[in-house]
Image (cartoon, rainbow, N blue to C red; front, side):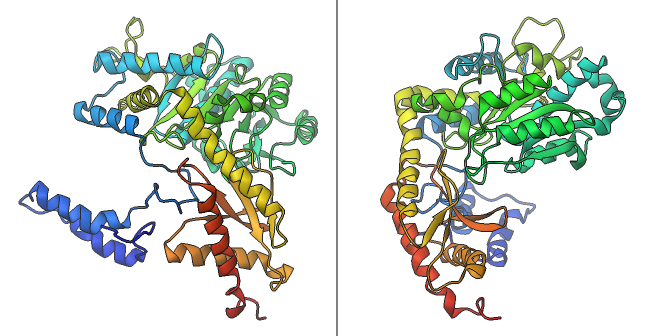
Amino acid sequence: MNKNNTLFSGATPEEVQQDLLPLVDFKSTGQSLVDIKRLLEENLLPHLMRYDHAGFQSMYNSIPEQGAALGAQTALAHNQGVTNWQVSPGGAMLEELCCESLCRLFGLSAQADATFMYSGTYANQEALYLAIHKKAEHEGFDFGKQGISGFQDPSRLVILTSTDAHFSIKQSVRMLGLGDQNLVALQVNANRQIDPHQLQKTLAELKASRDICCIVATAGTTSTGAIDPVEPLLEAAQQCRAWLHLDGAYGFSFSLLPEYQSQFQGIDKVDSITWDPHKQMGIPIPNSVLFVNNKQDFARIALFSHYFNRKNSSEPNPGIKSPPSTRPMSALPLVTSLLHQGMDEVREKLRTPLQNIGRLSAYLMAQNDFRCWHEPDTGVLCFQHQPGHVPDPHWNDLQTFIYESILSEGKRSISVTQLDDAVVLRMLVMSPHINYADLMETINDIRATGTRFTDTEKMNP
């Protein structure tokens, strides 16, 4: 076991590989569970990242919440496939009821529905499929039967999204038989949100030559946690008869906070929404959800068979709303977690990281040796350390040096990203157990690391 107060062992990839080779050396005779447990504790666990560590301030991961862990243990013990009533009456019904309850909880339309997915990436992909399918209906054909070839000129199809959107949007476009040419990046404002005025300019430029089938907004972009303005994008989508999808994998949870309601006005009219409870909600992976505000939209992806998911079946069949024909009981850990905590505690756990990152932002903005790249919408903050001894041309190199140095120490984890031409440091607070003092320790570490930059060859020509 990793007995030091570090994030993980700090071993090199080669060292990790050597430790893990015994785990995949399958022999003719089996080993006792005691021996296997010891092997896991000695060879695997030290190399796992500790998401509960106060220094883990980089990625969208968390350990299971206690109530969620109970649900996950129950789901594992019974290993239910919940695709339909035929394979698990209780599991299928629980998923359907959970989806209905979530739609009410988030204030979606009375006609809304949801489905559990393996990841936010797959949820985004299905949302784009539904959007293209609806566009095909406007063109007078069934996309499910004719595919992309049904469009008179598929090259005219275009999907609009932010330059800061998650890469899964581009991946989804490719997986659906389109190409990068069918994806147009929208410019962002100073706070890294889609700029509605620039969007209108883009719509005008594309009107004669392209057919817009979907606009993708993001609630909590990966790099900066920005929340795109929902209502202006909703108006734009209605204007060009396009589907509006909200990728809220990270940030949609914050719509549960009363003080965030204004940023989510209009979500009851958005066509589809992606949400990942496995992020700051502490629900075990896999646990992602795709919402639609009109449950009839799921009919565009439904497939039936004679032995499974029969067309005229009156029982609940979650499997007709999304592709996995074998799906785990993902709803159960979410249900038990919300039951255990109560919504007041859930909201407070969501609120605490936002308050701490906001306090850190205010501090850094008042410092001469730091520059913030945005005001945080959520629990993410991007900034540069700009000490006086390092000239402007080397600031990007300095951020990379700081990131690599801190990561190699294994005491804390921050990340680095690029915004336009700038390399910036990025801190993310997911856990309510990470307090302001923990963040300030990271800032002090960044400062201390920055002083060593002049000892390298990086500033030499």
